[in-house]
Length: 281
Image 1 (cartoon, helix red, strand yellow):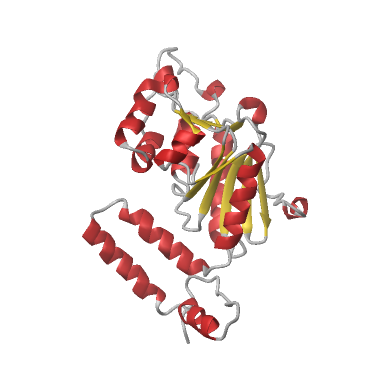
Image 2: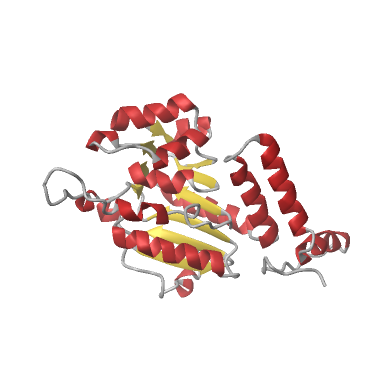
């Protein structure tokens, strides 16, 4: 990405996560390739800060999440932090006590999120996949869940898998553990992956291409449209339509609602207002 180094947000970049912004697109990269891009408790806290920045910064229109290197996207929680409690029998709750601060959905970020899967996505790494809006994967990507292999409950990521995959496939991933793996091609056929590319480095480039196209649109319209669709998964059809209609009416008073048709009729690029609370005067 040309000129990206100058756009690194040093205040939110750590040795384990890199946070960059350019052309209204944020790129979050897990930089622990030597450890399979596994996440730690400290990273869970860093993710919370990064998602807060993505939500609050009007310069950011779209965010992309990816992993460093060409072998791993994210292999879940670092097993070195899955320690025994003082009795030597039960598990401590670390780093799982931070599990619900990892993803954009868990942090109520309504800006579009793209996941660029450039290798193995396993266990807790599936959090990021199932909670993203658009998933791009390279042909070497593989998806599997290993919770039951190490005596853990497969629930959070697996509930997300059941929303995006046929139920039987989600259950096979959950119950068979490492012995059942989805290739990138199979994940694409079943709809878990939205765009399939050849090489690992192509995943990020395709994600950037998609993000830049999305970033041209009204930030407020994007956020409300995303909210309408995700919220519909939590309720029945009629209540979802009523909720969506409420979001449509809410947007009527926003400047972008008038700016879009005006720019179209005047054959010019629209000048979007990034403030979701802005109202027509």
